[in-house]
Image 1 (cartoon, rainbow, N blue to C red):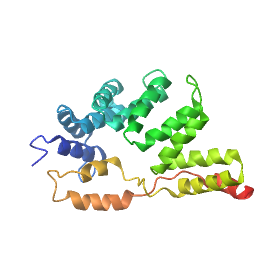
Image 2 (tube, rainbow, N blue to C red; image 1 turned 60 degrees about the vertical axis):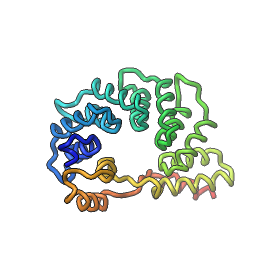
Image 3 (tube, helix red, strand yellow; image 1 turned 120 degrees about the vertical axis):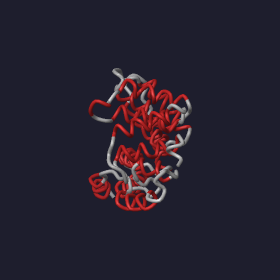
Image 4 (cartoon, one colour; image 1 turned 90 degrees about the horizontal axis):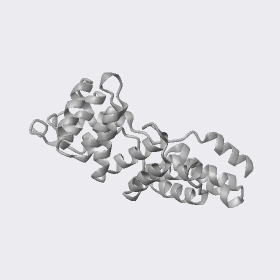
Amino acid sequence: NPANSGDPVSLTALAQMYSVGLGVPVSLEQALQMYSKAAAQKYAPALFHMGNFLLTTTGPLKNPTLGSTWLDAAAALGYSEAEFALGQLAHSGARGLVDEAQALYWYKKAADQGFARAWTNLGVLSATAKALPRDLAQARIYFQNAAAAGESKAHFNLAQDYFRDNTSSSLERAYFHALLAENGDARQPCIPPALWVAARVETARRDQLPLILREEAARQSCMRSMPARPLISQIENRT
């Protein structure tokens, strides 16, 4: 079977399944072992998920320093999710120091590959930067790019932005984006990442995997949404 033969795609999918208990018992040790085998083959998604696992897991397996190193390796291969994650680490100071220039660099790398959440974070960074110059006009452009890809957080930020303009046309735009933020944009279903990985491959459990995926996707699938109702009410009161 693919996993036993060392196929990195199947190993990564199975690692995801073990990390969340999707069709198999939860086993962080098994997940780490399979991530390691796939990452050793320089398979970029495995490098990323290995890094993310070490950064976010709990207990003795947690290793933020090593996790960051794996993210660096995935980003060096041009993997957009790793680039975005490195931007987040720099933006939040999770590596010990907030570095807005590094955050800007990595967010742009990810955004240039079409990673929609990177556009949203570029907008936030441009609007709230402390070490870098703030640029509200550029932030709006970034949010528009993200919203065009279905990012609800970007819709919410655009709604707030247009609401502050307080003109008739801007309030109409604010209302439009606030509704999309609250109700979720169909272009961004929030099926958990493990399902996306597992759905793309055939694994050693191919006889059970399709049914497991269908049931889990049906249970967890929803639209990303933001709590925009208070803003919607404010907009309605002004129009």
